[in-house]
Image (cartoon, rainbow, N blue to C red; front, top):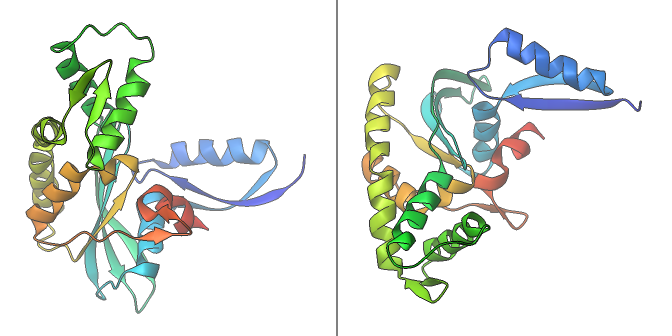
Length: 220
């Protein structure tokens, strides 16, 4: 088997045993593992290249995927090039839950029998999030209807943030790094921007939103 060097990213909450399992699996197929890197640290490294981060600051990595939400707080010391995860929190909520909310709404408007309904409605969600109305089997869903459902769904994130800030003991967040496809949802970005009173800029690297590639880019 050919031998390749690799840096592998893992969730911040992985313990030593879980990390060793990942490392052994990689080595068993011919990889030389140079480093195991926490995913929020990797994302912070990527964002740090394109955003100004105050020295000795606390930053939040808000990682929202299709089925999970991971929130991590890191202390960053630019002088010593240290990225330290000081608190991590997780929940099994993700963008797919919003897709199911939309499906439930559509069921009140029409008969849904398509076996591929989730994929179709997930694509609708992306279009609606982009600001355009979308249609399912002749039933139009407006952006306004979508926003009402999305904001109701994302409202619980405020409670999550309260919990994280309380338990982490951190008083101020200097930067928010958005990670994961579902972190691009307008309702999520608006909630975080309002909660922290900060503008969330959009960064594109090599044609890709940084949210989609931050973990891999930081590791590279």
